Length: 584
Image 1 (cartoon, helix red, strand yellow):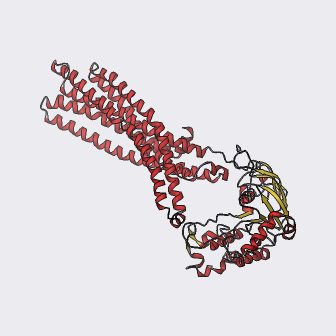
Image 2 (cartoon, helix red, strand yellow):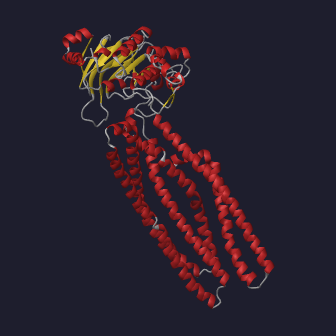
Image 3 (spheres, one colour):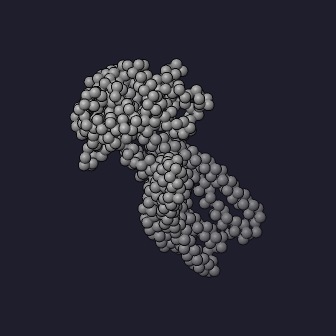
């Protein structure tokens, strides 16, 4: 609760005003039955029209004040609930931005989406829908019980029987419905996962004519959500039958005993009518409590899922970053200037519990300004190796050194600002071509953009787009080809002007002639930049200063094209198979 209340701190004023309005509204509503009793027992009994009109006017005033207070409460509660919901969403999203790849691997993407949307909405609705009954019910119940005992203490003893019965019934309902809510949220995760996978791979689904299979797969998870929700809500709605059972039993008892009291003259009709009103308010307040508990139970499930995101500790931090004064500041932090890289007996595995390492005892050195090629069979951990350099993952053992300092001595921001990486899976965002390129450098001039696009051969097709740099790209860049997307991603990385450029199989979709132009442009225009090229074909790396051969996460060989072609069996196999395939 302490963590939750921290998000409500900025809405303390709205929360307090909402509670005041709720309590005041309740008081005015509870006054109305007393006035009604006076109208019946005094005004009607004495046929005093003026008394009836005065009391009637008092009832109207109380009702109008209650209406006004209810309107104010609704406004304050909406501001409070939606504000807290927005604050929690912002905190979750901000927390996710601090995650390393290891953290995001722990949660599935659909689950994170659900926790950021559906779970927050559940809490938000619990605040907006639960505040009124939550604060109104206790006041209504205690005042109504007090006034009931004041009207007739003997008859009010009925509460001592009715209230515990209703409380026990509601307790068992709430106790059994809570685990069902947890299952329901997990079922929502599965539905979101299937939808996301289908939409992301819709072209593959169409190409393989797998629509029926996808429909059947979705129907399975959708039916699971339906069944789980039905079990949860069918149990939750037992609130109303339990309430009605106790309510009608109580009313019958009061009418029976109260009628006898009226018959013998110990109680007036107006008092019995007023007493019945308070009985209904007491029972209604208990019903409100039960609804609040159900909302609270569901909210607890959602809040638990949210706190798992908020309390997840990033596996990669700046705790060991070195600065002159011990504090991380932009002016005094270590800076990468040359871009030399050393792997010193590096081991890595994705999970601590994994039995085998993905990378084992990897050691090599890259001098500043060198171009390094990385080759190896599929699954040899080429992409994993380069992702360790900007600390997208943390090494398990050993050290990666840049410019003479371990990578953990640099702040993550500076390290990743100094390293541009074009990932194996190219990603473009909705927006214009220019907006996507400016991810590399948001203050880049048109001249700098043109230069980066020339090096990446983007200038070969940019003129054919509808509006040049202002062409709108669809989600994920669906309106450009795979090769064009790769070149845009390379231009974006070049625009960053990094000390180290990593191309992770980033020219696989371009023809060999274009790839040669890109390599020539990188060598000619960016001679001082350290370049690491992960590739599947030898033509991509044969001119590199060094070529590193990986096999099963281990270094199989290091050398130039000539030496490896003479000495390394894996390199020879790749070379000659490429010749047979027409790639050389």
